[in-house]
Image: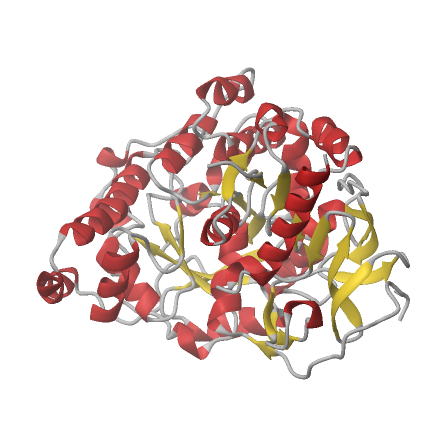
Length: 308
Length: 199
């Protein structure tokens, strides 16, 4: 023991508990106000960390490429995940397919910091999501509205992100879903207690969680935005709408200058309510990723519709 | 209402929890993201979060130099987890460009307890706060590997200091703001009040 400090030292208590609810939800609390960036190589992970990302999401293809190339999208290759974990000092997240609990087991065995049960990958189960209480690794799940968010939290998700429509560079669905979650919470707060059971039935959400949200005015876990954020102004928009942080996928590494884009989106997420500062970081960034009009996408290509 | 104003550095991290804890203690607390906001506070909480991200954001709109100046003038800080890393003199396993403000003469190792799967809770004995143990929530926490002799060690876990005091500062490797136990926030407020009275 190298430290010395003061002469009088307190006694040491015994025991530590890992994998509990508070440390699972707690890591997400520490990411608040930050940007989590999709990366497909160790080099991209380093660029993201340099730019001030609070975490990186390791995946094989960014959503824009999954959308373009098609095929089955699965959990990333294990050696790629390991390379990315070795490349950076910030938390590393990785995606498992909806319902694919053995992909999640593998990610937990790798020591990944957060598992994203993600609609961006091809679902493995069209009826059941993963029982996330069975894991010590924390999970983040997508949601389009309050009921979906509370169902995922009921299954053990320790963090929520609104789904948006990944890989489009179009923020319209992210806005829709964030407004639905936050508006749903405000609506709950306006109800009498004897109206909450009927509302739980309508939301198809666990009653206890409905009660809790009605009382506290917020989800019991952190809620980030995701799916279509492509510019600093998009990031600031989602924060003003009530997001506690942003996931940015294709928006960074599909832009003309990823490092500058990443830094600008990080700054805009922190200074989201200071338009003059968002303007300052937005100047001279070069081209954003090319976007897609969500309204022209065939229904079967919508990723947000995966999971329930 | 008069009395000291506590800033919470709000670049990123669990800012809301610190603001709520100070509010429960009856203190005035405000978020700080700009140099002008830093001027108005008598004490500063540096929250949990990612120290690399906060390091970068300190530089984006010129907060780092004003913060260093205020620290030189004796601004007391409550620094938790990432905050403790930022306030320390030496950071191991950090990034080359990581900010170490140097106001706290300790050496920390980032993520010294390991990744998230090693994040844990444990009861801590902090005799200064009374006999009741303090529930320590450690999330990808730093390990204090060395502390100058003049640093006051408030609590140990696994042979390493996890809560320290030095000058006006109180720093922890864990997250007191994540519990409803506000005793460390109150200890910090006493130190701030002492400094405001002395000034």
